[in-house]
Length: 398
Image 1 (cartoon, one colour):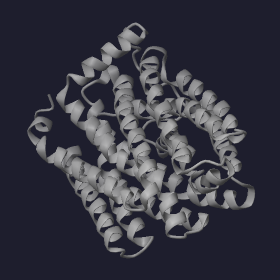
Image 2 (image 1 turned 90 degrees about the vertical axis):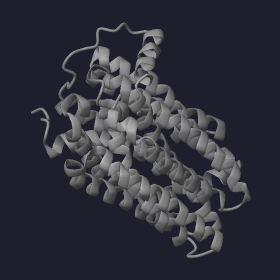
Image 3 (image 1 turned 30 degrees about the vertical axis):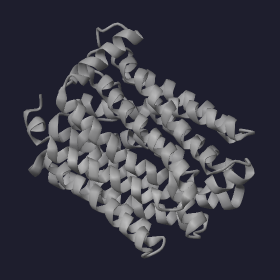
């Protein structure tokens, strides 16, 4: 029996596809301090395993979407999951920090396929605010994964060491592949007639970039996620090494932030029908800027310790849940015949910016905790200013 649109089962499977990337990272976040010690590296070296993931993910964005527009969603999904599984095994048995960093890039190359195609399949199945609501529903379900993953990762870290977290990711991917093979239908209605080549892919990206609204929504997607990734890449060092949390306590602190994301997606589902996607994003960018600024004040004034980081970050992540699904859907809406390519380019911009932010945070954290809230606050305020400054362009949708 195949999955059908407008069912919870379809939404849940699409959410799990988009959760593959966060799961690949969040499982091993509590293990980063141990990786530093075992691999005899430093914070920047361990953080490079996060940024290499994003660079690999960015590379995958270029090919998976256009390939699926031409060949179909389902076969490309399975190819991505297969590559992810092989690379995850390589991560689990990596003998050095260099090998782990390289394997993480390959792991991301595989993971990017299901994530890109999960969003493209939403565009295949739904239109307008309904697509935004579906992405928000997916975000609510997907949010449970990063809420639980760091806690489980902390338990695995204490019980079995850092390599076990990658084996857990492999089990998740295998289960997802079985579901895709057995019950997922092909959602692509008409295959793209455009030829498959890097030249045609980049020419198609050029068509997308000529649309001013697409550029704005892609930038909002990239900014909101970049602040989240700054926290992902630096929070374990700040909360464990500086504020003294255990790996399991860190997992719960991270999960608290993820509850903010789930809250944001729930609010988005309730409001998008009345306020529209831009109306939901207007609330989201306020949360991004406010959460970042409160965290910066708390760290500067030494207020609240670990809570002074975790609580404002939950507000920021609530803003991500309000902003990012709507921005992703808005970026794809003008391009029903290029939904895969639009999803790819949107994700490419998102991952390239986040990878650069992650590298910056990894180097700056050698000087203490302050760089983390400083980067997050700067990104949140930038997203707010961009949204407010582009009201006329977004209204025209041209």
